[in-house]
Length: 290
Image (cartoon, rainbow, N blue to C red; front, side, top):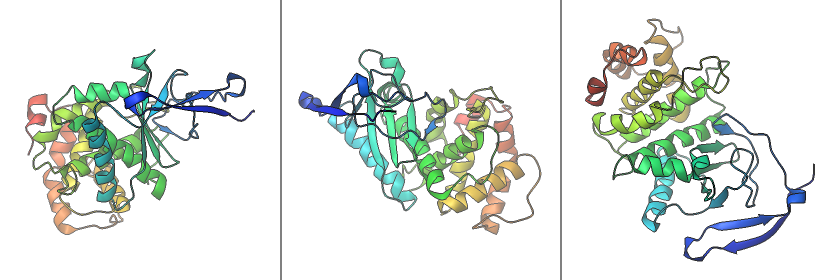
């Protein structure tokens, strides 16, 4: 396969978007990946990669300067909560096909590409932009999975990866050094943005979990945010409780960082978590959890 040849670099006025022109003869066309976690190598070109439309472009900005600063600050804060450096964050735009950018992708090469359409949809949900902070925290959760070879639980679909990333996001939104929510009601309605794109294609390799399962995952992550955990101890505790408490069984081995105090705290919420995961909790009750 021919290598991609970068021809020119244009600075588009005040937008500061870096666009690249490609020689179509040498363009590398990559197979489209359904998974949110892509391993495709970044292409420094107008043609982004096979996960995006052929007319999509990469940019260093999104919306206003304040909005760009907000996203870059969140990227750094999310990383700091986990004791990690921030990863490369770029925004994908496609003026000729805007809806094609309704996606955010975390790459194993330490970068996140964030679509303009999903950003705009998230921003429309609230003036504080918590939805986009949550989506970015979810994507950084995949960065933790790449770094530490997580999740520790594997299935035939992407569900464990996605539910754990939801949990990582819930944890971040609670931490005082992160988003700093003091009650779940501050984030519950916003998180339904992600839950709404859960799915019931349970045998599809790209299955992300059902909407109720995604709701329960972020709730469990938020509860675990009461304590200080590393990325790996979060993983072991998350699946200990998600698989153990919710189905009424426990693994014999205690998870990394196991705490009797934390165990008692999570057990107090076990029935609540089960009801959320099974779709038995009403929206009103979910939105008003402490």
